[in-house]
Length: 210
Length: 364
Image (cartoon, rainbow over all chains, first blue to last red; front, side, top):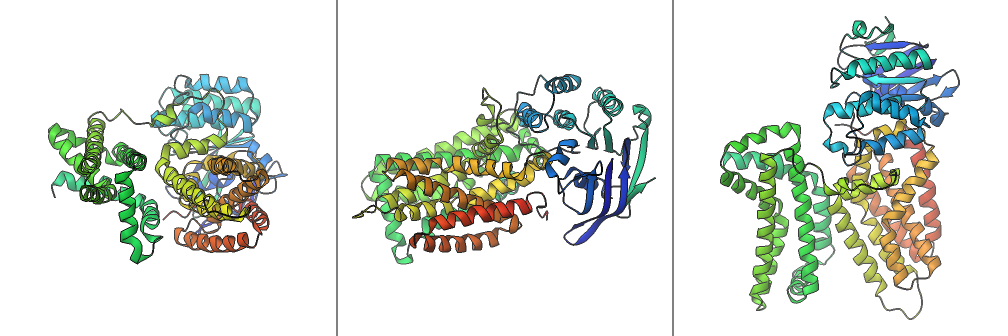
């Protein structure tokens, strides 16, 4: 369970988001909202990439600030348009995530196979297309023992045949490992995915269940 | 100016000078700002004479110009590879000779700081009866610009080639630790800044080590070391900018702040290793080498974390750097470098802990 309370986020003194209270139980949540409504900001705050005022807690006791390391072990994130150092290889990043997120090696191999990215992982990321970088970032988001996975626009730049792979993974991780997913997407993939999703609307500088 | 040159000027030349303003100002300061105005002419005349008369000095300068040319060429390549500059490939519609001419102008303009110094040095060479050296200097730079123009035209016509630098192709037989991410960044992206910084740092330390003393005194090399380490300020700024742009994912990894800080200290320890080796080979006591090294790592960490506090504001950073330098200079003279080292480490860790997660670069 993920609890957000008394959240305010400002950029240069300007209020971007104010969320008095929001609780995500175990489930798959579709964060919706127009351009610039604050969906990505919300995900980045939950991922610990952006700071905010207020409290974000996992399972009632793991606080994003007080238990920064434990929190980050359980909350994974994939950016909409991931930016990685071009001179690193995919393996460099996978090994780093595997080690820090204390991942099972077999899981990592299965993820690599599922997205079929092994053929280029040894090459520098600068040689990848945007779709290849996207697949790498999705693999990184599933690495470890996450309780929450945040996927910002997971379908953007993803090739058609990788979409069912991703949706199957979301289903499997949710059903078998009780992983909660928070997804943002402009694409209506609910039917395709056959995912049972709850909808969260980010609008008027706040977020609430729809 | 012809339309093609005009476009290339705006897309390549202007951004080059804009992006490298810090480095060029730094070089300008080293070359012209550290010498008294009245001595400036004779200072550079003696430098140029040194280049003309000494083969070793000449080779060193030619090597430096080569590094500058390679790095500026990498910038041209990266500009050509940017998606927003994809329209430049329409230039391939004009004949190769015209492409080459226009690209050559770009390289000559980017190479301009070198051209100015090289031309003046050639005049000195002719005046001192060594016209062959003068010719060699000009021909060398002309060949550099021509060769790089050929490579750029090749890139224009075959956009997928030469996209990645050689360093990133090097495969290591072990899993790369985060420390090496930074090293890779330095070698791939800021090699020129790194080399200029190291050359200056080495010369500064070497110069102070040559001061004749009638008894052993560690404060003298430490002052030289302080000047050298302070010259790393531009490199640290580049590293911090890179962290904010490309290592955002790093914040989501479950790594304790203390571990991250130790890793950062390890990276800076690696960075000052060449200076440490110079101290060891110049018979500085081992304990003093350790003290001086710790001081250098502390100062680098201090500058790194100061940038969090200063919101990456370059102007304020330079001001704080000056104050830090003067205070450090005074405390070293009073023999209190150990105190300074403790302060650097303590403040750096405090700032790192306070700002690492909360820092957000101001995007203008």
